[in-house]
Amino acid sequence: MEGRKEKLIKEVLDKGYVAYCIPMNLWGAGAKEVEVYALPRKDENDYIEALAFAGKAEKPAWYYKFKNKEVLDYYIAELVKKREAMIEEKELAKKEKEEELAEENAMAEKFDVDDLIKIKQEAKAAAEKAAEDYWYNELDGEDKYSCGFAWVEIYGINGNSKLGRKMKKAGFSKNYNGAYEVWNPSGIGAQNIDVKEKGADAYANVFKEYGFKAYACSRLD
Image (cartoon, rainbow, N blue to C red; front, side, top):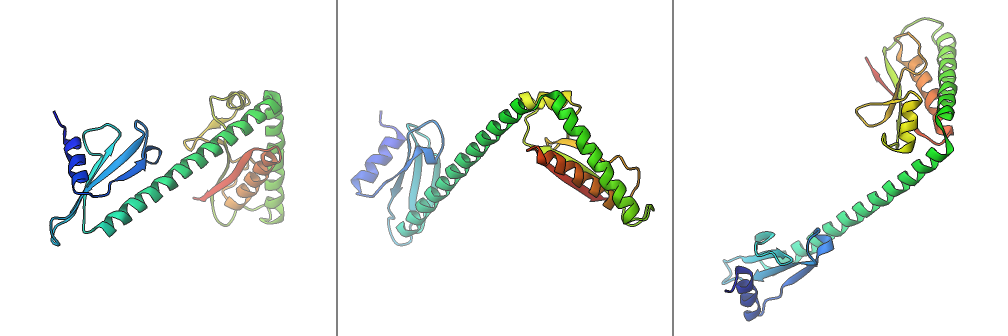
């Protein structure tokens, strides 16, 4: 028994109308290509009916009406362009992920738990000094001006990876952003945001020197 798709193909071929074939890698997984069949207008007031079928599927992946063939051609061209851009973006993201994984594995081999603890202590000392210098030299030892918070976030480390497990053993924990977070690294008890930011900057810079993706963050209270 002839199915809906076969009837449509026959009708398209009988009327000599051009069909489109979109490579499936521009559409998704599960078939080699997407075929688009268009039925021509019956008159100038009618629309072109276009149906797309993915692989061997009998049910259309989409069904649209177009004012004329120029509009249909434009839609198909834009569809292919968008799909190509999407594939390129996915491939780029995949490549970046692979590079991050390779970098993380290299860091895991480079640093053991004791190394991470030493870096943490070095960063803590740098944060304390930076905050203390700013406190006495810029604030005259007074807790004044804008209040707020500052912290450091370390990105690019999977918590379940070898390096991630070492980070946990070294005393680091993750926040809801997926980053390892160090709150108020200078430990200063003041409310002034600037002095806390100085400490966070110093802390992050130490980790950056060792190749980590560390960033100082802050917000006003």
